[in-house]
Amino acid sequence: MSKAADFQLTRNPFGKLVFTGSGGEVHEGVIPVHAFPISAPHEGLSLVTSDGHELSWIEQLSDLPDATRALLQEELVSREFIPEILRIRHVSSFATPSSWQVETDRGDATFILKGEDDIRRLSPVTLLIADSNGIHFLIRDSQTLDNASRKLLDRFL
Image (cartoon, rainbow, N blue to C red):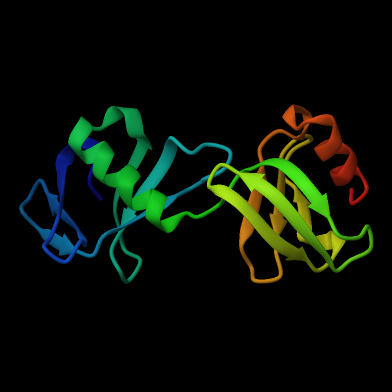
């Protein structure tokens, strides 16, 4: 397994990441995988082959050269889709299933909450909400939501 400084990362003409190790070995279609994408998004990243073989472990993204870090962040954004809820605009019912209209960091969204079990507490203030289609929405800090949003959310917790 390579150390973070012992490899080069490029993109091939098909948009796949290409890993070149210090010994010259080349692996196409490398996949970056976060160890803790929500609680530590800039730490603990593994580069793995398409069959799951780990090529390199990266402790901190900040340890990488700018070009490599940019490539990895670009790839992670396309793979890790977890919109962050900034405001809860409306909830159709306090019984489930219910339709939620929310404002996220990626725009407005409407989703169906099947049951209260689909709201998972990751920490005292961080919540992960799974909609009926399996898309996850993050509330990073429930205490920073506006009063109306917190009131709506409290009805489900």
